[in-house]
Image (cartoon, rainbow, N blue to C red; front, side, top):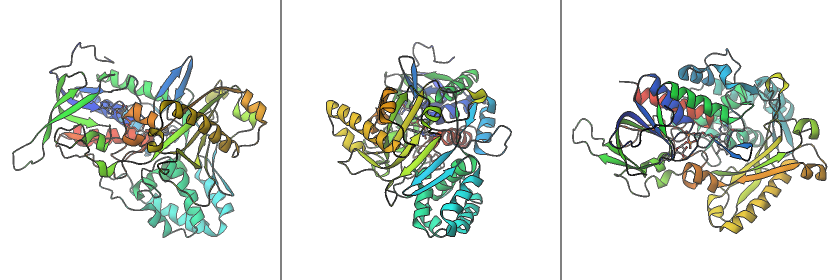
Length: 489
Ligand SMILES: Cc1cc2nc3c(=O)[nH]c(=O)nc-3n(C[C@H](O)[C@H](O)[C@H](O)COP(=O)(O)OP(=O)(O)OC[C@H]3O[C@@H](n4cnc5c(N)ncnc54)[C@H](O)[C@@H]3O)c2cc1C
């Protein structure tokens, strides 16, 4: 069954209950259900996907996240994260219908560096723009190639310090950190070294791709797989409280989740509880924890994003050929939460044009899309009342669009504005509202919990706060933690 049709879940026991139908929860659910476990997936929102979902307005479907699926490799490539995850979920590569990117760029101050899904393009661009640093860049690449970033016991350390032992040019260091931070760092102005290595490989060695119908295809595929494997799910159904009992046995001092209370008041039990809700968010559900538990490890980084739907094709009508542009208009990269009184930090960001993928048979998105992402302050957006927020959205939509257009080939203003069909914008408050992430923290807690274990023997973290990020990362996280804690015995 897709959604459980049971009139009440009260009193039922499951092998595993999963909190959250984001990418990691869906992947963990499929894995457990494949092995015959009785699994229930609980999601507070009406749609699956979490941080990477979609919504519809009229006939138009908007992706909430997806700029690009990272880690792209063509069908038949073995041993990479995407290949492993598809094998574990028993999904054929072709089912994702992934189209590779046309090509992306990093715009850092005066530098323009192109990269594609072929690493040699980036290498030759670095040789062109930073000729004195190319040997250092190659040494850094060799170091990353040999690095075992996915080990569940990998220790956090500073990527900036590690990179500085190879590359002396600070501008090149910032240039390399720009895309990797924006697509996967929960740490301000630095990255954990294992996470830096994950992102280096997933963006520079592997690359970007997207299905023509966006994240919807990925979510449908995961939901179908889960249903076929016998998994149950209940939407609009939040977990309200995890009731904890302490163990007295000396060999196992950890307590355990004895009952799961839903928003509806129903009580369930499970051998294992997997939570994708986040580190502090999960602790705060536990009856043995204070209401502000985990406050020392809450992410501060959040984004806003403008979405502009155009009646023109970006590439053929405007000459905008790049898939993604990471830009930084200041001398240094400031990847940190804006000050509390600053709504948005427009000095750097990401421009994404989802039309610019090599879709099969020359197919194309019917409309043009321009998405612009920048760092935003949760506190500053939170301080505004509803009318002020609406005005601020309008102002920042215009401002970020102008900034983005300065990085794209020039287009006559009237021609651009007259082609706009619809605009939307999300802020840190939108992320918080639809995913319950504290601060709308896009990549969750700065300190990750690699092995997914918690203070309770049968409560396990997966997804963003376990430490594997992005769509592919979150799914791998769900698989790894389900394998480690739910299928080992
Ligand atoms: C704007 C944006 C753009 C992005 N772009 C990309 C991209 O282009 N490529 C890429 O790879 N990644 C991208 N990401 C990152 C990617 O979306 C995330 O890393 C990944 O989806 C995280 O998945 P998750 O399972 O860890 O968590 P989540 O997606 O946060 O899932 C957690 C789920 O738990 C639910 N939940 C929380 N509390 C409860 C509760 N008490 N009871 C029941 N349910 C609960 C939430 O509603 C949510 O559905 C983007 C993210 C955002 C926000």
